[in-house]
Image (cartoon, rainbow, N blue to C red; front, top):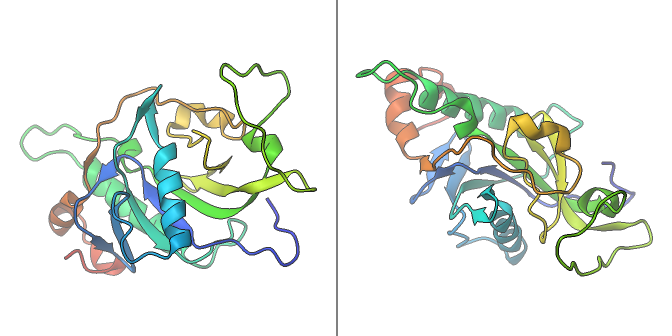
Length: 223
């Protein structure tokens, strides 16, 4: 979605929905921490993190208790420079560490989806994506949107795993948490997870990377 003249996106938020952490984990130039921890953030960034955390649902009405996030500079999804390449490398390393076969049993403990990464860019979004009104029937009463003259409201443009675009706003449960449902990414409807993935500790990456993943040295320290 293109911004109008003089509109600027806010600082982006990169989120591992299925990975939890207690302490801050430094991966490359980004510090990932729990969505429960918004200390030292500006009021604006803190509000965005809280809104995003409230959107993350595992299935039906089961909200994810906490996820891991990092604050990033403003991003443009139409460009290949900036912080997106580093975040993509970080996700690849995390996915590699979690999906490598276990030494004892030789099976894969977690799958790539466990390391899915969603990037939220705070900016105005069109109501036609976050609240579609064509051929839909609301199952609950929903308050009207306070849209501007361009049919836009404050929200988030995003990318899921760097390939699936989505739009969301604070009151939506719109985060696309499953690749099988990517075709519905822009509808504004809640997208469920077809295979249940339990949250795991992001701090395990520090241990696993040291053993399994030499490229970790290229994206920064793990301690």
